Length: 272
Image (tube, rainbow, N blue to C red; front, side, top):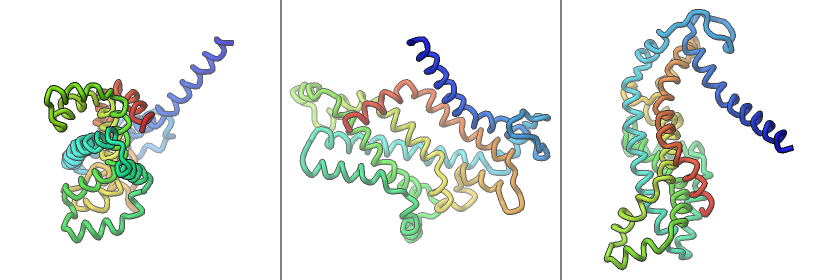
């Protein structure tokens, strides 16, 4: 009976793995197909065409788009991690009625889709002169990514023994110094989780970028690649090649942080 259950479990895992690998297989095969190759997307290309990567990079101005993505994602990550950790610490340690209300407010904000308030956001950003600027998009990303970050950091900090802080306070450490010297170094697992979730969300963002970064110099990768689709032209090979290139940084980030990801996500959610 145990052997049978093990085989069922293994088969289920293989099916789930294949389900996740299939999109990458289709992306890979399509990225090497020339535009006149009309064969099925499930078969390998008859003629391998690596020029799709060169054309996608040049025609979509992906060099500039990569820089825009890196700047926006990196700065957003720094603010989301630091502000989320700083906000989660008092919410986890000081159980007052006000803090509980603030925590519930942040959790409630997680269910608000950004698209529902995109029109007033657009008007606000336009009135502030933030169109085609880094700071406006970064501010929007930080605002909408912070609730999840605070939720995870708060839950994880609640699992850290208070005795560590009490010992540091006896030695004369300030509250801020205690946080950065004692607490923050212990947040590596949940910090990795927040970095992966936030990084992928910001890197792959389309809704904010297409509305607030409309100039060719400020476009991100998702908007730049969408220019390959129009009413009369649809170059799937270029889009697939560009998408494969743009997916490399998030994959590398996940590979470096994966050992912390599951543990941090589970720990941050259990008590949160």
